[in-house]
Length: 285
Image (cartoon, rainbow, N blue to C red):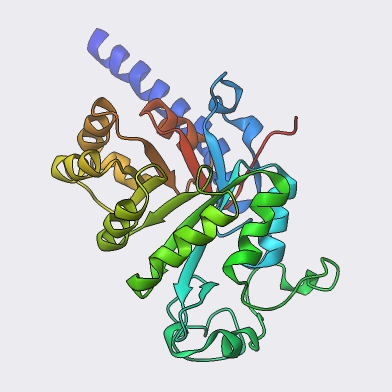
């Protein structure tokens, strides 16, 4: 009888935890935005940094002027955006390898010149009906335009190198240096070769390797190159040992895309101090 009673109590506790989590997680899944005030980690003295994914992409079209403006106005510590090089070696801000999803054009980004891609109109993404109200420039942003929000609002530009001709990486470094942003900017990429090449150009800039899975050997590679690891948050449940190993090795940890406050708190418990999100809005000061 006692065993049955203990089992019943344990099941009741587990059920209660599930209900509490559901009451928090489900609304976060449904809501367009969620206040960081719901997370415990937001109230820590050293609260993790909040980075807006592709700008504030849950309310504005990703990687656009209005997305970066919305992220800055919301009070994010930084905003992330994606870079490609054009056929003539210019850096433009767009996520996909093609222009199809976000513009009225079609084709690979690398097959357009800068002037050609600038003639395309952004016609996709959340909140695009508000372009006129926001004085939006409905074009694919240049690197300089994307960085202008970091300069104006004194926040962190998190620059993901998606696909590029590597000979133009030195131009990217020079551009950041000229604008005094190299000490504040963060470079990220899934492509190891880009990160190794950029580290050879700049020994001090913050660089994170983006990962959808990683091992202790990958952590050692990051340690050797002075890279952090920016991993998809669901990896924590499969590779917790590697995450803990990275922390012990002093590798900086970031997680993407964390869209509810329960997951955010779990990430912080495992030593993650940079959270990239589509939905979680910073606390107002």
